[in-house]
Length: 250
Image 1 (cartoon, one colour):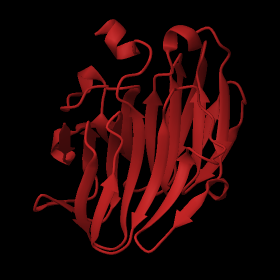
Image 2 (cartoon, helix red, strand yellow):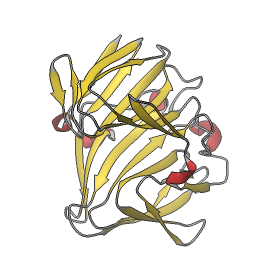
Image 3 (cartoon, helix red, strand yellow):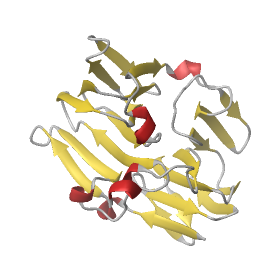
């Protein structure tokens, strides 16, 4: 059983274009540094933002993985070699590239904007032979459930249009109301939580925006927060049914 906390200093750092795009990586590549390595079928997670003006990450290739982008603030633009056009996504929108046998894409993060890019491992030994495909989803297409304690946007899960091949993935964008919370957990899943906004207090320690929390083999998570705490949440299998890319090659 474990609840492990990774603050910003314990995450890998990166940048593009001489610092015009900055990154913190809760799950980075091995060469990036940082304390956390791929687990379950989560391979990579970067929080990327523009401190000032827009900047572009140029055309680059992908294979096998499912590459997902989630717009946290502002807007981004996406280009790929399959659709051959630039598409704009705004706050709350999401996209997935099922990169399959190969695709190239580029991204432009607009002024004062932020996004998560997360790579999922859908059993690459199978997806590597499939043609690439792409989907984007607008924020208003995701179902919302609200009560006095929490507002939950289901990005990937029940009644969401979001389609991916990676098994057992659920994705939620949560906003908490009030100050004391208890979340019941499935001990056969790993919970990956990123504090988007606000302060979460756990075991007497205040955890600020940008903190990443990994929970596994736990039945509940108890914490306090200021009203308006925003948590981005991914649930993934404790043990995928196939050897992951990281396991195969590390």
